[in-house]
Amino acid sequence: MMAARLGDMPAQSQFGLVGIGFVLLGVLATLALHELAHGLTMRLFGASPQYGVILKKGVLYATSPGFAFTRNSYLMIALAPLIGLTALVILGMMVGRGTTWVALLALCGAVNGAGAIGDLWMSAIVARYNRAAYVIDERDGMRVFLPRRERDTDATKLREWAADETNTTASGF
Image 1 (tube, rainbow, N blue to C red):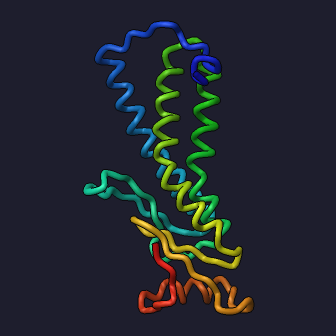
Image 2 (cartoon, rainbow, N blue to C red):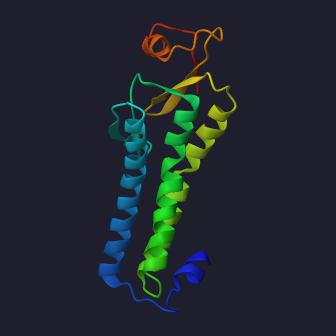
């Protein structure tokens, strides 16, 4: 509905094999750009992102092993693809108004939204913690660390503490 209104989609479109190729390419590009948006936002906060695929789950991921993000930074990282790519899709639909590109962009927007479901779930969990919390993103989940006292919020010390795999006071998901 939004694609038809915003992009003035043609009433009929013929895709053919070339069109199907564009759809597949668009879906794959959307998935890759989604993870790239996570990684670029991680980099803004000083992390060195790594990218990969978990074949058993059929998912792509971006992570920064051992890097502890503040709660608010993590929320920005988690929501960056949903906000950023949605804005690009809407802009593209306005620019491509009246063409079949609107349909492809609508599909890419839906794929991005579906891919963000896990990001929204993780954001809802992280948002429950106070601002002093730190989050370590892992390739298939996250760990949340809370300082024992208000004065234990020194980022460097907490990152070192959180990166220590022998530390058992972390809350895992």
